[in-house]
Length: 333
Length: 273
Image 1 (cartoon, rainbow over the protein chains, first blue to last red):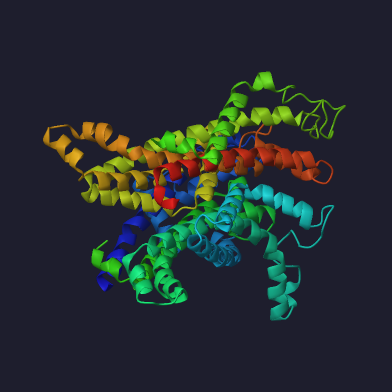
Image 2 (cartoon, rainbow over the protein chains, first blue to last red; image 1 turned 45 degrees about the vertical axis):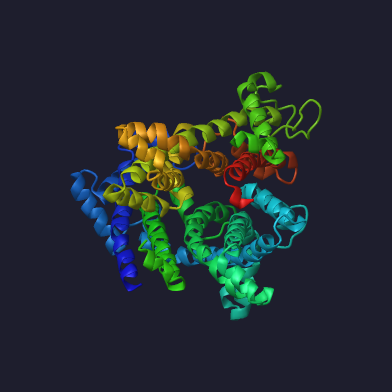
């Protein structure tokens, strides 16, 4: 098992280098002169000639775009390793400061969402697998499927109209992560206030993921139930509860672990839209605003940090995988 | 054989029918739309749905039904082109990795892992920030970021198939690598790609409409479903039809593609049933 983990750790080196290369390639796409930058931005975003000029000049300076490619790449590698991504073009604050402020908010939002997705969809999946083709199975599969096809920005818009003030109910706040001045509340008040603010955004992030995970756990359990050791467990007279709870579930849950690492990038991407709609000051909103303002240092820092976070979560999932299921390391994956 | 199974799945057939209908609407949009989608009519601003304006009018008096009919062109073409691009890339890279194995496979698998590490939606936004948003750039960028799933599928199928008898037979009879890949392996691995293409079109349409909703997709004068929805936000309290109709259009299209994808998967992979 240790050799597997060591091998797995070594494999993140080329992947990390790959991440640096891809992010570096994106920088190379930067427009070379203010005119072409202005041409691109027919829609929203920067308007003035002067600002376009500053963006181009600062981009060149920051990434050394007039130097030879290998020097530029060296500079970029150094930035990634020292986490020094320069100052924002927008307000000239260090990019890392902005990320340190916003990342905890986005992580809170996404970790709560992942947790709720698992809590709801695994029992649904188990139920469907144990009663395949029953009315409930068909009904849950179908309704989760409908939810999966609903665009989250539309649902968010409708939730705001119906539950967030509009003309109907005014149950939930629709702006921000907590109320102004909530920091001065006692801890339970603060937690309650944040929870109240997160009901609608978390709903929007959660409902789409349910279908995927519950179907996956249904399939996973159906597959385990057909194994010989389950038949053996039943044959030796164990109660159905023990057979399912102890023998089937534990084995069926293993593949679900790795899914956590695929959910993270999907949610981080999705939270760009949700944070923007609900004005939550997290990294998703920061990334959208920097895209609008062509704030290249911030965009590149977020890309590098998002990718590294996902890489770490893939690594953790893979290691958990062997810890839970020793069979894997023997197969010499 | 897939078609034979699919025929018995009513939901999947409904999805297919909706998709065909949408393509007809998109192709014949100028004939179907009763008004010019960009014609301002300041005498009929924010009118509720009526016989004259089936889906009402927007804040500039433009006919929402006509805008939605023309919006189908954007959504369907983005979905179709983007997915065609990434299926091509995915098939080529997956085939090379699966067929040759060894260090080529290790290198390509790392590349796949690298691309997976980036949250797709943010990666698309970030690249568009550099190259500028336009419908062509959206298609290309979705195409360039979406191929990993297909590549993994094809790689897996090739790994499984390359030691099967008919492939060994082809090798023994002196067939070239090119011929083995394209005549023997690929036709036998395409079924799961079809499933993933169907889901992929749904996802691409969702991405395009999200981008337009955020004001980062097609320019505002082009009718797109996400764009109409985005403009509706100011008038939500007075003009519900502006929010409901484009949202339903996106939802119906995505559902149709997802239903077809589900049906195809059931037809191909009986384990999920």
